Amino acid sequence: MLLNAHDFRARARRRLPRGVFEYIDRGTEDERALGNLRSALDAITLEPRVLNGPGIVPLATQLFGRKVAAPLVIAPTAMAGLVCYDGEARLARAAARVGVPFCVATQSITPIETIREAAPDADLWFQLYLWRDRGLASALLARAAACGCRTLVVTVDNQVAPNREYNERNGFGVPVRPTVRNALDVACHPGWALGVLARYILAGGMPTYAHYPPAFRSAITRPALAEAVRIEPALSFADIAWIRENWPGRVVLKGVLSVADARRCMDAGVEAIVVSAHGGRNLDVAPTPASCLAGIAASAEGRMNVLADSGVRRGTDVLKYLALGAEAVMLGRLPLYGLAAGGEAGAEAVLRMIMREMEIALGYLGASALRDLTIAPD
Image (cartoon, rainbow, N blue to C red):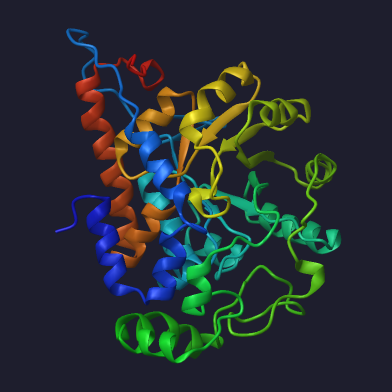
């Protein structure tokens, strides 16, 4: 019986080859950032109010002018399709049934057009890693817009390849490096080998980054991508201005961790930011969102939407980020655990589990609305 995030994670660990599981589960370098994310959230307590008579507090709210069932968004994750066959489309359908947005990654295994066809009612967002060739990047933006995406999430905290040493040991990356170790690992997970990898191969070959132009598309076992579609290493506000000129919807910058940068985003006319430590996967000495979110939210002064992510394992973690000033929270690893554990139904179950935990905690906190959550004094 899968009752909490730990249960879903354990099931995912059993079902996935080590390389795939550690790719979605672990951090970078000494993985201090992972521990810091958990410690920072655990250190926060929420102040309960009694005899307040609020009854049941609805989770439904408005996000970017659109009603959502809860202030949650499935975060963009590269290669989510390796967790489960057709994983990105399954995540989109799960999100649509629950009533929350799903953000499609640039490095998705399934193209945005196929995801939209599979989930016509989904509130799809698109995440952008800006390519060095602006013509190709502009064409990608046009594809996302044509599929009804109105929110673009630009990841701004991934300037260089992170130092994930476990990926090297596992031979997992782009390209995947075949070794005796990972071949045996795949053989020990026949459910994944037959239900995921073999299905991709039979359907058209080794999985690949579906959004890359055909001339530059590379299967996960082939050498690195061409220079034209490398992620821009010197991303600046000039690039954000270019994106705004070439994107018809709202722009969200993901990876902001300082008040100074938040103010620069506001000055640039950005509609929203995500206070994010990339789930502890990039910079091992980064501050935690819990430590800087309140100051960033206060600095926004209502002029810019503020979201948050990183480290969420319980519905109470979501409530803590909301109490610190976030308007919504992105979930990264949790939906992937659900996807690995039970496919589309597993992803939906994880979302409903988090929402149920939020509802229970709200009942004890006595808040009359989500915006009334209060951090308890030390």
